[in-house]
Structures are given as structure tokens and as C-alpha cells.
Length: 323
Image (cartoon, rainbow, N blue to C red; front, side):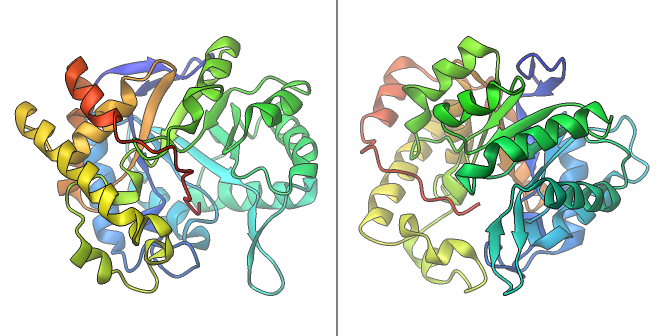
């Protein structure tokens, strides 16, 4: 699989990474419904076998379950892939998931993540959300301290705006940014991607297939059967008036995929990877068969006419991903 350097980190990443959000299951507000740990581990092993060399997870995914599954999958695996995780989304006294960027909270989260992942240091530790905004400097300063202590090799953020990147960049350089990016979420193109290219910030995009909408496997009937513990059942993109237009885009992706002998989802990921400044795409796999279908996306050469066909229908909607 093709590889590229992640910003200025020195890490050579496969263009596609394993996204471990869904393997956390559905036992929390932003879960994906029931998920077999056996399927998750088999999917991770299949991805590694096919050349994927990094896994992105977070403490909040399944409230620790995702990190434990990743650790189980990597037990005895050599060479080990890079492992990235995130902090700042925690459960408060009422049981709600909230943002906490205070020093003591992040340190507790890191200790718990190191324990669940069975590692002494993390390859990349990221602030999950810039919430609350007024505390991002404290959160970033804490990550800088943890890096100096040798518990983190590289530090980055997810879902930050350019203005927020500038604020924390005044404290210490930002190594990476993880934003949503897909044919249905293109807001980073105008300012964020140019800023990251200018400042050497490595960008790894999440939800390149728009949380399953652009895989070609979604339909109105399937959406209607999404279980209550799958967060997508509450997402406006999976309901009218947005759903019909989104499925039409998936159909167009499928038509282009037929010309290349690949799936709609592969084309959606290929479109993301062709954007200058995108180092890699985080793809969520729940079963080994899904890995086989997508890992070749980086090698798909989309023609200019195909790109224009795909981009013509974007309405500029703001992505509403809950993560």
C-alpha cells in the first residue's frame, strides 16, 4: 500500500488507516450498535495483513472498549502498527459525555488509555474536540508536558478550526489535525487545508465515506432499520430531506466505481485521498470483508470528468458527525 509522511512527524503512514470508532460497539450515546469483538479483531488483522500500518481510536469509543479491543488485536503482533488515540471526551457525574480539557482530567485519561492499550507511550495523542473552547490552551499545554515526559511521541488535535490551531500553535507546534472530510463535508478545503499545508501540519481525514452513507450499501430501507443504539439513526443526514440526495450521490459513486472495477465506497475514499494536503484517510472497518473492498482505494486514478461529476452536487451543508 502507498505510504506518505504524516506532516513533519517522521511517521510513514499507509494512505488508509484503521478507524476503531465502530468497534467500540453501541453501549454509549455515540455507538454504532452491536459489534462482535471477534469480528473487530479479525478486521484489524486483515487490515494489517494488507498493509495498513496505523490504527486510530479514542478513549470515549465504547467508553474504553475500543482501546481494549485494539490492545487484544495487537497482542503479539510484530511489527506493531502506529496507535493513535484521543482525550477530552469524558463521562460526567450525571452520565453525560462532556468536554474536559483540564490538566488533571487529561492526565487521568492518558493513564487509563496507556493501561487499556498495554503500551508505555502513544505514537500520537490528540485532543478530541475543542470543547470547551476557553480551555483549549490548558489542554494543549498538558499534551506538551506529557510529550516532554516521554508518554507521547507526537501531539495533535481533531475538529479544530484555523483560529483554534493558531491559538494553540503559539504554545507549541501542532503536529497533526484530524477533521471530517468527504464529498458531503468539504468545509476544510477553503482555509483549513491550505493553512495545514503552509504550517506542515499532517492531516488525517475521518469519515471519508460519510459514516456509511457513501459506501453504496446504504438504502432508505436499511436506514429505517438502524437500531436505536446506532447514533446514525438520529443523524439528520440519514433522514429526509438530506437522505435522498445523499443516496443519489452514493449511486453516482457506484456508477464510477463500475468503470474502475471497485465499490462506491472505494471511490469515495479515493476522492478524499486525491486532495492535496490529505496524508491519510481513516476508514472504519467492522468485518474483514470490508477491508478487502476498500484498501485499494489509494491506487484508484479518478479522471477529471469523474471528479467534476461527483463534486457538482455538493450543497455546502455542514457535516453533523457526533464524534
